[in-house]
Length: 220
Image (cartoon, rainbow, N blue to C red):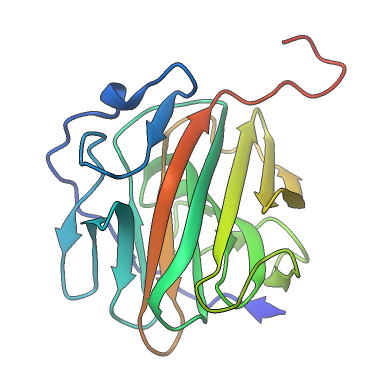
């Protein structure tokens, strides 16, 4: 098992956005392959972290230990299914990376996390700079063989936020499902974190934000 550090330091820089509304398609509420900057994701370059577009992907690089960086497009959703491909672009595999749901500000969001060395968790941040683990034993990230850890591996993460039900899938396998009613709406986004040593860079691609599929037995 893998435990979070006590405090979480977040970096978020807003940028000029052309608007995620331009990236609504017939298939998705928001669809982005990051071939251009039309969807208006955050771009920044600071001592702690940097983020932006590179080589038809989106990247977040965290340059310091015990630091998390987030990026958002500037949208507003309630119930959504968020899917993206992720890979380690450089640095340490002892990291956290994943999807944000119902992001309101740096003190209010859900994060659906995996690590490049094979762990996962669903966490919440509420009025605090600390992760509150909702999945597993409530303290640790849990290991899973569903997460690919070999060099160059691409993992598909899917986060479902439907009412108070939060579910994490990796490579088509459900890893965690919890209930929490603290946050009901907000932006989507990406997050990357380091632990006590080193730096890490993560690449994101093939983002789809859709309306959730109704569970069996419920009308659509």
